[in-house]
Image 1 (tube, rainbow, N blue to C red):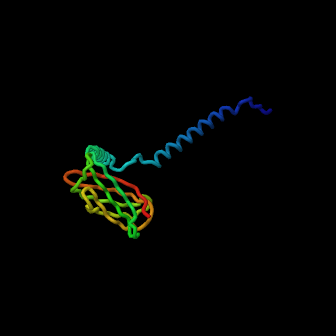
Image 2: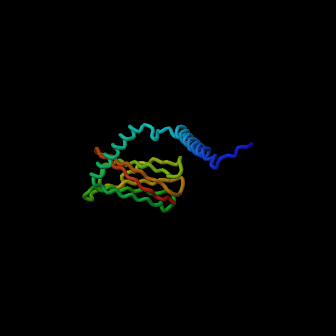
Image 3: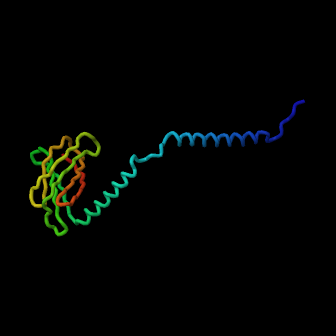
Amino acid sequence: MSADRRPGWWYPYIFVAVFGLVVAVNATMVWLAGTTFSGLSTERAYDKGIAYNRALEAARRQEALGWTVTTTTEPVPDGSGTRIVQTYRDRDGLPVVGLRVRVRLSRPAAQGYDRDVVLAAAAPGDHAATVALPLPGLWDLQAVAEGDGVSYQSFRRFVAP
C-alpha cells in the first residue's frame, strides 16, 4: 500500500531554501566587502590634513590683505603666443610693488604640456609675459606672487587660440 503525502508537506523545504538563499547572499556580500576595498581612501591622511589646515590659514591671510588681482590673457596680434598680464592692487587701489610672480600653465585634460613662466614687472603693480603655448584650447593659470613676507595665489582658466 502506498502512503499518500499530506497537503503542504513541502513547506519546510521552502523555508529552508529561502534561508539558504539569504545565507548565500550574505556570504557573497561579506566576501566582496573583504576583497574589493581596503578601507584606505587616502595615503598619508594625517599629513594631508595638516597641509590642508595650513592652506586654510594661508587663504585667511591672503583675504586679510584685501588685494585685488586682475588677470588678462589675450592673443598676440602677430600670432606668436598669448600675452598674460596680472595687475595687483592693495585695498586702497594702489599698485603693489616688489613682487616676484611665477605662473604655472597647465592643460586640465592633457598632461605633458605644462609650462612655468616668470612674469616680469611691466609697470607698478603690473606683471606680464608673452608665452607660446603648444596647443590651442583650455588652459589653467596658477599664479604665485611673493614679496616682503607676503604670498598671494590666484587661479584663472582661459582659452588660448
